[in-house]
Length: 219
Image (cartoon, rainbow, N blue to C red; front, side, top):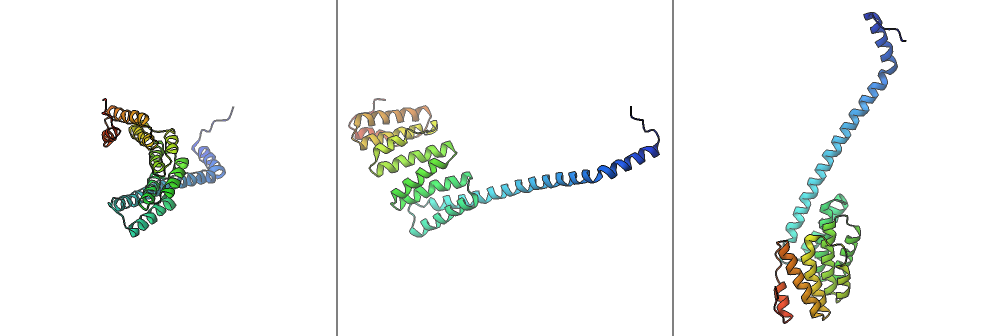
């Protein structure tokens, strides 16, 4: 059994020997721990500042994109802002939202093939289910405009979030209508209306599409 240390002198001497042997290691540990906390706090501050900067850039981009008709100069400015968001804030939600706007810019410039490529790449790379689903809807619309309604139907077979099912059904109806398949189109439009009603979502224009098929909506 270890001998007990009883006197104050013995205790002090023992403490001195212990500190001489382990003191530097303890100080180093404290310094490292402090550096770790500082680095973590600095990283958190950096992340917050980056998120704020990305948010501000995205807001500026959305304000620019809200123009009813964008000039060539405005489209170029928006493209530069999108490139900046991707290069400086890549991997963030703001960068992904900006990439969807790149597809819209292509459509506005009548570059449907460019929009198709952008949306296809987005779907392959995005980890956000809702945004990926939204890109699928937009891609299907572009494919219909490119006279590829069959491709649009294939695109719509991918994962679509439930919140977007009504819109997906409507686009499916558009694809069937483009393929001169009125029965399938009618069923898809009726499905779209039913899903929109279930989810309490506004879905304008679908009843008119049903009327254009020459049949009254049975609902």
